[in-house]
Image 1 (cartoon, rainbow, N blue to C red):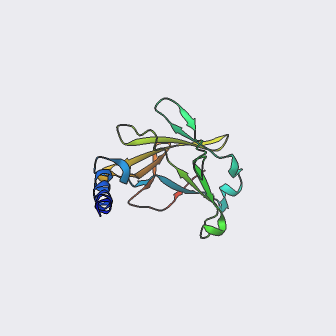
Image 2: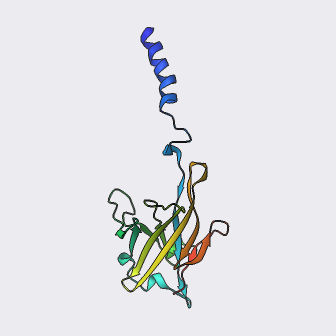
Image 3: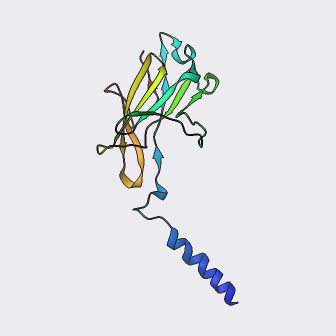
Length: 158
């Protein structure tokens, strides 16, 4: 009976000791992806480029580093949703925005090379309240193209 009481005590006290609190990031919700569509003059831009050649770079405070995370499903920082799964929007490219280096203004920079000659710099602005990390605004080349209040997908204008 004593062993059972110790085990019961362990089951009730141990979770309290290791549970997360407001100062710990174990319970952080992260929403830092953005969907891009690019229908230009009625043509799906992403159907005209080599989608496997897209490259994502995260700014680390000094330089841009190519995203390469072999431990993740979309290890290159992006994934592609084919037209048959995009509700008639053509190809959709889902890009994971930079959360590795967020500056004191709660912003990060991500560079997307759609092709070697077509590169966009994306600035993401985050809300860090309530122990969360949620993108609230996206700018491309300094122009706001998406806000959390409006939602939806980012339409590229090429």
